[in-house]
Length: 201
Image (cartoon, rainbow, N blue to C red; front, side):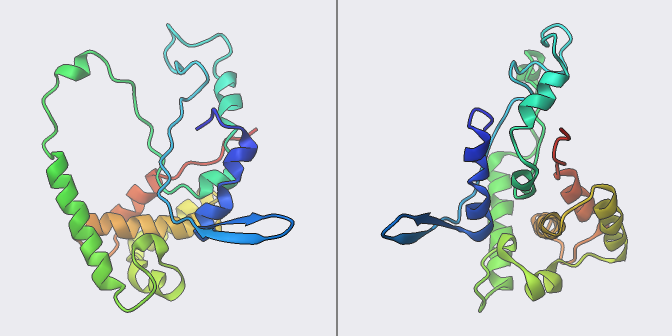
């Protein structure tokens, strides 16, 4: 992702928020649907070896801060899940396969999507990611321990209103994947673990 210029990346902000792309020209103004699932990857720094003393460059960790600063805070705020992936070693390649395979995960995802289709039947909302206002509060409000955790995290992490809403949506989806009716503290905690704060310049 960071091989693109910052201005290009920031141009994604409005389409990700509104689900449409508007193209304005002198003689016309056209709007296209753009409900997408953005999946992006980036190295921690330009050389990709941050955290490895044997391979990291001499400018670490400053090089990482400079590199990651190409992604603005408002763009990061619109990305729901941030997952750090450790490098795969040769020893990892001989480990046994995970207990839950792709077919099992796909079945859980399909069940969660079916649950959301039934939940929002008769409305313009199709999935938790589109829920806002009353539907969001009706179905995604956590229990009291979850509410307290979210309130504490919102202050500590300085969550924006957008970030707060996205945490609720992700927590609701995590509960759906677990087959749980209510959103609990554990679901809020996991959703918060996927939030990434903007790098400080």
